[in-house]
Length: 113
Image (cartoon, rainbow, N blue to C red; front, side, top):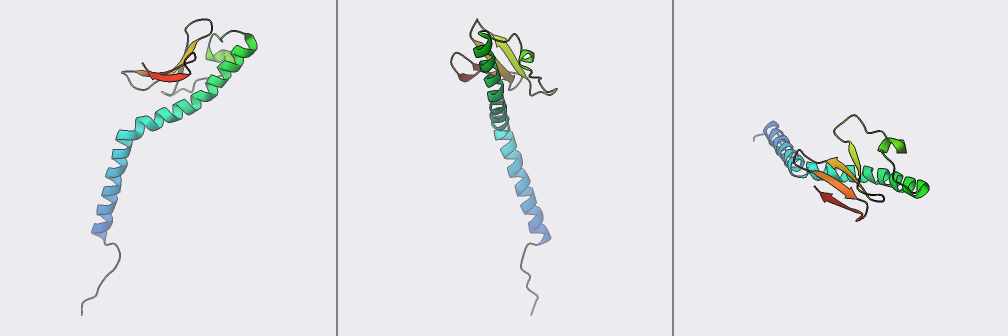
């Protein structure tokens, strides 16, 4: 009688590894931007809180994020702060070359720009 083996053979292991790799690439390709956007919005909530606290304390908006003691990291994950009027601001980050994602303080919502 022949010897019967159980378990994963080298060929099956390689095939399984290739399938896992392709699934990972698929997830990163289609969901990578959403994951990054979620993380950027989550981190931005801290910056928004700093701006709102400053606004409440000083009765005016800060001129820049540096006024809050916030330093942008030296990476593509920077926030951009723009004053729209005396009480409204936009906090944004670059999503791609085509557009930014911006939080408008008067609407308290994120929008693609």
